[in-house]
Amino acid sequence: MAPIAPESKTKIVRSDNRAVYDRESIEKVLDSTFLCHVGFTIDGEARVIPTAYVRIDDAVYLHGHLKNQMLNALLDGQTASICITLTDGLVLARSGFKHSVNYRSVTLFGKAEKVADDEKAALLDAFVDFMVPGRSAALRKASQQELNATLVLRVPIDEAAAKIRTGPPLDKDPDYATHIWAGVVNLETRIRGIENCPKLNAGIEVPEHISKYVAQETIFD
Picture 1 (cartoon, rainbow, N blue to C red):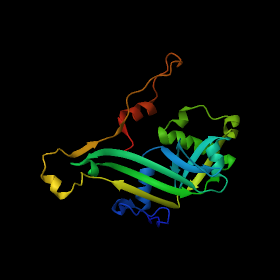
Picture 2: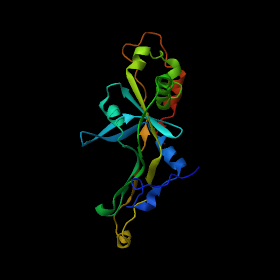
Picture 3: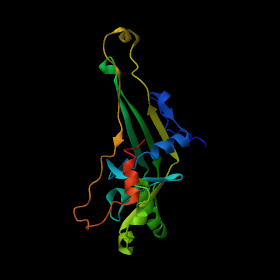
Picture 4: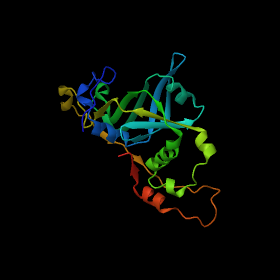
């Protein structure tokens, strides 16, 4: 899989040993969560908003209400900045200066394109199934009114870079001789059971696709 050539906006200069440009690694990070932060401007002012996304092939998709301010701003021709970060551990060194975080992140840039109306239903199902596989098949189908009220945007993954840190603390050489504990506190996102909707009709059991999802215990690997 060919790497994505770094451009001026995606070339990592600081700690460039953590830079990753191959598409497979970038897509692996993108597929490890469904939340991102989108940077955009309105009237020359910068905004950053968290939102859900899904990656399909060589693009990420965003969705929201037809009058969503962020989505409509992205359709004015500006370049969106989309960031994804996964926190894997607290790197606790022998000095505060050398403390760090183990993480995986991706930053991508692209110009948004409006998705055609006849593609929206399938893409919205993909959003749901990316969060919980098999979920969309168990749901009431979206009405035409709901589809008409929803805007879906495609942002191609043309300019992107990953930055990844792993491993133990990297202290200054003299500090290794001290009697200060150092190491990594590993972090993960866990599933903590489920709660039935308080208005759930009697006799409705937890469906198999939910049971399988909960059985994973951890997500965002």
